[in-house]
Image 1 (spheres, rainbow, N blue to C red):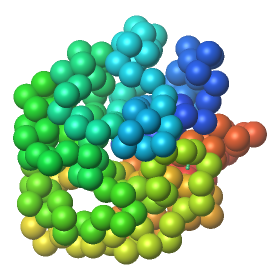
Image 2 (cartoon, protein in one colour):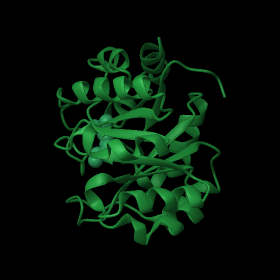
Image 3 (tube, rainbow, N blue to C red):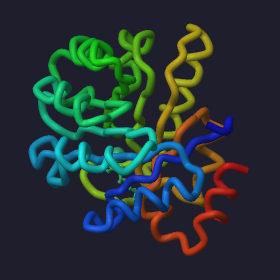
Image 4 (cartoon, protein in one colour):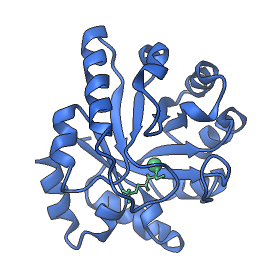
Length: 218
Ligand code: DX5
Ligand code: ZN
């Protein structure tokens, strides 16, 4: 894997699900490492996407890092299923479980990287006690449920706060940002301390994907 100052994780939510193999090939051909998988249950968020079966089928066609973002209530019910399906990173929402620490342990016990996602109205201090043990914080910069929404600028402050805590405490989690990421805000996000940018619409709508990636990575 190439060392990059910033990683892009394209969200397949903005792609045609019936053409998933082509989408995976496209992402690999762009020399990207991650693919972002938005799992929605119609309860935690007002939308429904796909589950472990779809991810397992994708796994047979790709070596990308499967970055699963579970927008589901009580994710503890399905950690084993998503791990078995071949996810590499499993991120769960702080707001979706009463027992976040237990869910993180379940993900680690499966040998996967653990992420914690926080909604725009959730403070970074609500997950302070778990920052030492997780691999990713997924800062939602839109209200989860749909692609193509406008970036909520207040999330920049949360990224800065996380970066400060990380430096002060010597933690190793990476900061991933999800929602409304585009060429209009990527510089501010990097400066704030983001390590991985999830991009749905901006990536899949870009006519020239290589130019888009070069600009983000530059
Ligand atoms: C929203 C999802 C995002 C979404 C991002 O609930 O978690 O991953 O696909 O899409 P864009 O980049 O279009 O905002
Ligand atoms: Zn997402």
